[in-house]
Length: 209
Image (cartoon, rainbow, N blue to C red; front, side):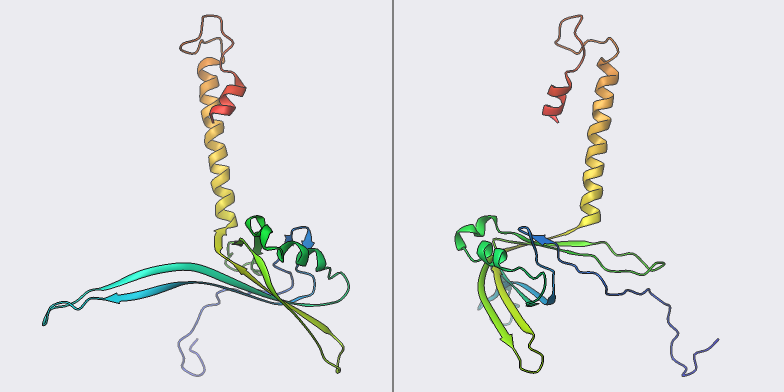
């Protein structure tokens, strides 16, 4: 059946709903409680370099990449269950930056029957809390808190892909162990061992893998 307004007909691509949080535990602190806003930025500086060249001929342009850096801003409402002091104590100390990593597990809430999307893990590395703010209005007496974190590295991985890769690696190791045990485990003698040996030592096999 043709569209009423003679527009090109479209196919339904799927639907999603927002009801669950996306932020997990951070240093033992439930950072996602009463989280109102989250913004992450990660950028690198790229400089263009041109050459003078020769008249009448094409010249080249070069890209020079600089250091990458990022910033994360989070806004909370101070209320029941919102315990941010341990988070402040851990991430405000610049001496702890080497071990302060903040991971956001983003999993779209796809409705049943829609095309599934892979959950993604965003890990901010070497985090330091650089700014804290607070505001309150007389209209509703809601205390709003904001935190700004700087970081110097960002790892983005697909959780499903990483899990599948780990499972494939485990299956490969298991297959290798099964092959070796099949060769030497039924009374056979591994090369280089005296006759009457007990086959491959599982501890040595595990260590070799």
